[in-house]
Length: 202
Image 1: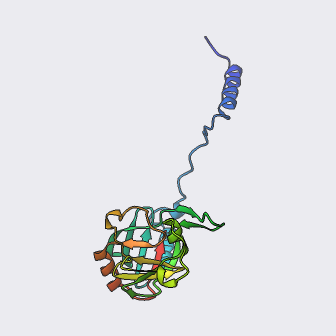
Image 2: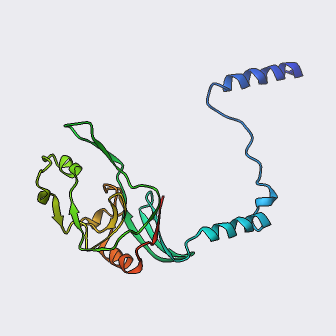
Image 3: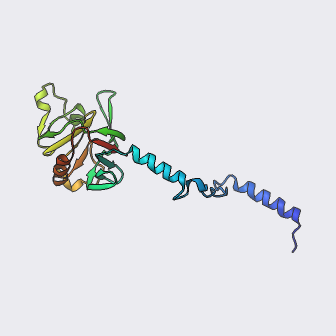
């Protein structure tokens, strides 16, 4: 059966209108990038030079929270790669009040603020609430030794790169926001960085 052009156009319009409510989208793909930003172009080289100027001149730490990986780099050179653990993202509520905590590792630019040997953990309120224990009034009851590993590298707001008693969990997002490393990788990182070393977390 031969279909007239008018009937075909009408059918296409009706069919297109019916598809509008389905969630399908038939917009054309984005055009190819302009020649100005193609690989090897003058604009691409200019952007690469600008990015190189932004890169730290010395050693710096990069942490990928999603991949549970930490790198120590100098320029493009990878000096060290390690499996780590970052924040779990879990929410904890205080059953006795309105307080709540989200155990997430912050993103952004930080710096190594200190280098600590045999760090001591001063347990915050949430650590007792998480365990279902009353928050102690005696500050001495908050002190725990040996749980943060041999070394710690604080980078602000109570967050640190430190060790762990549970190395089997490395590679999983299980921390309260700090970055955990195994003892061998932690010792190597501690010996390789200085106070002020940049840290990039994403």
